Image 1 (tube, rainbow, N blue to C red):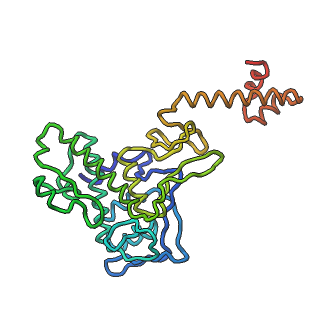
Image 2 (tube, rainbow, N blue to C red):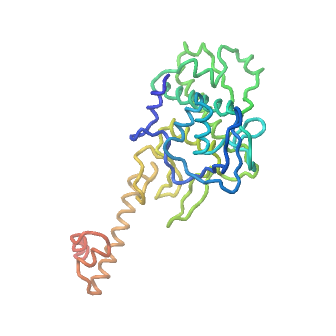
Image 3 (cartoon, rainbow, N blue to C red):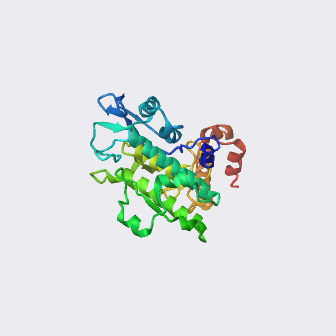
Length: 315
């Protein structure tokens, strides 16, 4: 499946990277190429950035990119922060050496995962080339169990029985593998942390919000973006009704606009709108009693004069 398969996961602007309320990635101050390795050090000049357009797409191109292109990507979006075994999100590292081969491995896995997910959404199981990146083919269950089910980099090898292609529900079987692999990406992004810090943080922005927290790791942001792409969600938002985080599949709300999860929905939106209207009506009556004109009240309340007139009349 070619690069056009990723069109399934793009939004109306052609972007794959979903925007979410927060989540910072730390970019080392120094990153350079040394043979087939990225050598980096945070130093005093590191940067904190947020995921943006091109982050996920750029990582998908790493699998076939020249070393200089991988370096440019790392200088823009950060590094994987690998441990000695090549697993990402190693907490407490201030410097490191990362083989480009490991970067390309994760990039190939991400491409294969998205290709298979796109095929599944179209009622197919995907190409064998993509399956070879994430699964053992033509192996018996016994042979599979005798092998190491997890690669040194931390992602699992999946069992894919080729006879399932002729089975009754091969697409559903492929969907379960996509689900398992996505959860493996998300789990790997947090498994290396030593202090058990949560993946969400609480912020006060005039009201309490729960937001995603990447703990500075690029890999965590990539894993979350993969999940958002496959689920075709617009991003993670905090419901203006219940205050819980939810994945939004509708168009992103405008800045400052209330938004609601499926459970709260239109009923909660109407309740809050009525609450705001009654509050404005009470304020309009109070200002009118102080002698302000209808126009002055409308300006203060940022509304139309006809609405103020109706409120004063008790409508």
